[in-house]
Length: 233
Image (tube, rainbow, N blue to C red; front, side, top):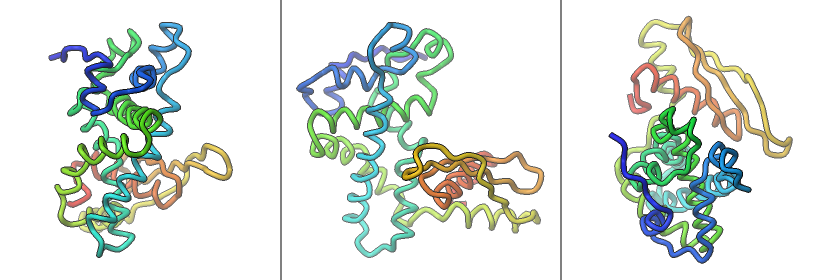
């Protein structure tokens, strides 16, 4: 059942910020296809880029404070779980971003409001808009309000996805997972790697990351999710 549309003004209230420049939030809610269809000068992609980095920093800071005795590896696994697509899409739905998005007719008819990728982009763009308009404090207030509960859901760090996939493969009599780089994009100083993982004859899964190690973890987690095995088993 479709949700009632949510205005940018209502969305601002849910984000907990009075925008000095409301057009920033309007841009964050505008998908590229909608901007092209309506002849608008900008979409949410640049704010999405900004929000991704802001979210990563704030979540890392929250984890450092919440788990002062944990190792870098444990913190990294928690961080990856908290900034992955599924988590951001969950926050987007909970806050109403799905109902506030401005989509093209094609995206609307194609179920874009339920598309996790679009919801993830919108969530990151909204955080970017908060940062651009109110600085780190405005972004942090929103992230703390939405992520503090998520951080508390798992008292134990998530299991390493590559280890979990390897254990699944060995436990089911399959050969070890094989990883390979299939693409690389972005500038040389800040590349994004795409890694593919395959186990025997099963369809491969892919993941992206700022390093091969991160991309391998994302690919392994995607493989586990597809076969119905969460990272925690």
